[in-house]
Length: 368
Ligand code: NIG
Ligand code: FE
Image (tube, rainbow, N blue to C red):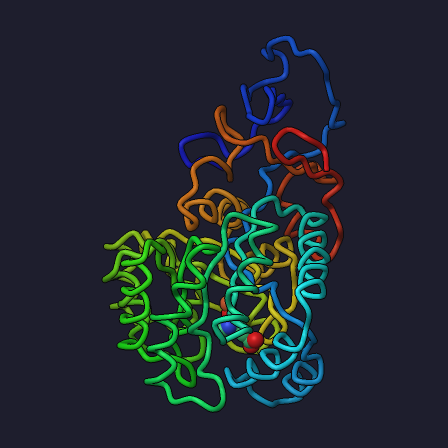
């Protein structure tokens, strides 16, 4: 999945040394190894890098989903329902729920996951959400700026998010994110919050242009963020800004599936030279799937991606969206995170939608 390397090697072997890929090539040329595992002609792909999820929450919003399927539109305000349930949950309940979802992801081939806070929205509840997330991944993101909670003004809340809440969050977080959208935070508030985070050592990423056109994507490009996520409604100027800045557009097709919004146009972005990642956005509101294979199938069926582009977006580019070059490709020197599919090629991920093709997941050279 490294764009410099071949997309697919047939009759291949891969040598793992400790936690790391040591060699990849034709089986006939493989160096000797202490132990051998025969994959039986099945495809071996990099473990998925899911660069966008919101796993720390309690409760669900199945009724909201059911109403959407019969015509009620998605609105950011539903987040407050999950905030109430999350605040009422114990640390143990939150931790075991995240463990369950991370296990679900692992069984579907995800080996690196980013996890956001954003359903606490108090100093205490954001900090504990991040502390829970940190037990499962290094890639934790402070999303205090998810929505303005009841009982406070937007001005007061931005002060809290950029002040005491940020101070409490930064010990547990690597990234800072803002939901920049009508009904959440505008572009000026997003700029203020992202700058405050960067001053305190957190790198920025952004939710933008999910529900309508807006300035969020151009803000992400202006600030040189690693990634801007959703990118469903894009003007030509947005596409140009993404191409020129190198900021990755992370597309989240499970959201469009679960909200009945139009799918983002991945083909337009790729043809313009924009780097595109795919991620699940697993959350209780807009998209409650933990399945990267589903996202790949949707991207191929609905968004104009080839199966190879979609797999690369969910592995190599997902890693880039997290500023990582140690995962996301099966090349020497990267971590031996790999998935064995019960299929002869990765094309089957889209060709056989809904079928659990992941038969083995290896993390750091160990079968999990
Ligand atoms: O990425 N867009 C903002 N946050 C989530 C949805 C949150 C929710 O509805 O609970 C998302 O889609
Ligand atoms: Fe999200």
